[in-house]
Picture 1: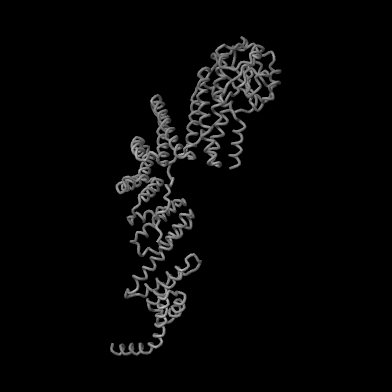
Picture 2 (picture 1 turned 180 degrees about the horizontal axis):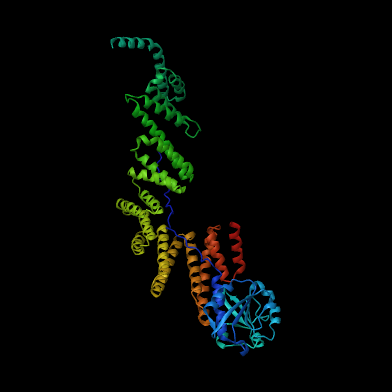
Length: 177
Length: 397
């Protein structure tokens, strides 16, 4: 009779003896968290003209982006020099408040940058974008990635045109254009 | 009473010539069988078994069962009903054998035929045809139930249970394994698998008791030791589990199964520490166990470079650590400090990538791996590759 010695004994993985962890649910959260922390830092390291220093601190968002959730969290938790942070989602450039301090243009709406720059000419609205090359064509601050690491470009001329002053400290970690 | 005896004698006298003829047929069948011609023997025994007199003789049915068993033996792979017929004839013989003259011999042939089912089950099992194997094991069990004291019967019960587990039929597995245990079948895997079933049912105390009795019988068995550690893990008795694990690692330093369980244990310790009451202490311990876990998976990869679990878990460890690191930063973090944190987290995403790519290469359709890759690419700003992973994931839904 043939014996069963050659029966392979399987260790049945019924309980987690080779437990497999799963990836964090929201993989976009780190990027949004980083950008929102940087945006909050910009409110500290960048100085707006006097007329922008009253009322709510308006951060406008143009285009669809998950960043809004993080910004809303920021608005709930923090203030800018005692001022309430107000997050506004703009459907079009026509709706942008005159005293909008920061305008974030989502990457999906990057094509609106030129119009946004035109629309805000003469104002001190800090335009922030997130697409390679936009820093060079006038975006004030452009989030980029260098060798996989999140960085940001600062367009000094754009800041000057908007009468915005940036501390040297922030410049040390920025890619200055 | 006397008259009856005379009548009986008369009856015998009357039937002798006819009965004698049929007995001759039985003897002829027997002769042909001895001459190793079961086909010819079958012709004679088939006639004899239809006769009114010899059909009541257990010898006829025993011989018929034997002949059919021989015919089956001659060509076991040929699809036929010979084996089933043989079993039926032998059962008839036992039924008729009120004096117990042929029962023992019949049971021997039945046992032999049961073994043929068993061997077929083994072949099917080894070919990973588990459904077929289970059917054959069940047939063997049904046939050998009367000779239930045999080792082979207990072994068939165990393997029927084991095969049921492989087929994810836990209730049936429990029945067969339980029977094998009651037959005192000696195999550590039996204790291990039955304990796992109890554990799945939430009967942790029973699982624990069973493992304990198994460990007394097989103190050095690796599977039982792993099962015990898994049970401790499920109770969150991590200190005890770690003590057992360290001992096991000393004797099984190159055993991949053991190393993978160790990885799970360290991961669980780190995970529980990360939500512990003393964040400062927990952070240090989490780091310690992160490194212990990393070392364990590296040891696995040194033994098996293509081990999916080790590759995946190493990748996910780095990935999740990077995500946790970034998400833990609050809004008050200074930009300069954040810049340094991002240096570290980016390094971790980059560390994760080759392991996760390898896991993807080993198991291209593993959804968890694709999800992790989507996240890693996204956070390394390789948005196109991230989108490609998303497309693959969605095409799987």
